[in-house]
Length: 343
Image (cartoon, rainbow, N blue to C red; front, side, top):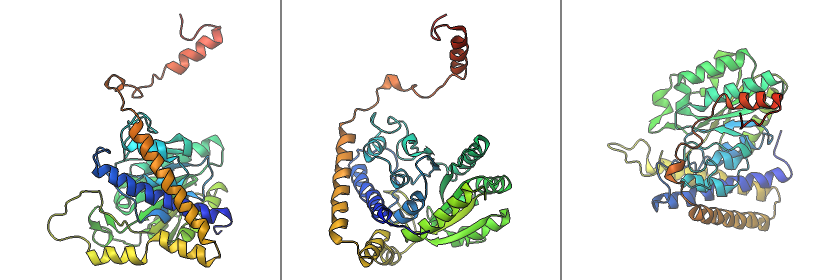
């Protein structure tokens, strides 16, 4: 199944939205407008967008600590996302989540997590919920190569295979878990082969080709909806920036300047796809119009975020607790014809 029609331009738009959003957010981070840490996904846009375009609006998704691109890849509005990074009340989590812990119901993102592999069991549980409810929703689970060595990865894949859960495990293999290469941390560096141990299909794709990622993800989604169970997709990609912005590496660098520059020159997923579109006969003016539109949307998001107020200290406990009895009291009161807030 290939990208077709309007999907082709939408893929370009979403990849570009991720790239320009990340570039501007890095500038805001360096200007001290974004607190905490900042993990850029520049270079990994195709691995994200190709997978997200295979989903329906009502499908669920989990992300990672490097997850600004994931909601954008599924169509999220930029204003609330930028405000969230700045810790503002106008953010999608009202400033409570920040850069690494975004949840956005509007695009089905149930969780992003700073815990390595933290989203894998949540995605598995979400897929189990869909199966119990008898619906054909699919869950897409993003994680990096470093998460593959976590126990939650193995436990979740085993459970998902055993119960044929509708979940796609999507590894963005950028080659490095922080500063440790796959070659130095994986006894079996071909990550897709690990799927065989759980009786599920494992697929490796070029993560810099949005079309290749989409084809693999669309096949996996079709299989999951039909009751065929989970798939492990490994998208070989590359992050152009450091693990987190401002990280200081002591001693010998773990990757050379030549390696990074070669990836930027030869393997930029946006430039590669722009060439594909032009070769397919897409008018360059159409691409230029998208590029201008994206710049305007990012600028608007920054202004919205800067103008949004900070959460007030007295609201700190808000959204932290939910009484398990609240729904019960309302139900009982309704049955008795009483005011659920009265006595």
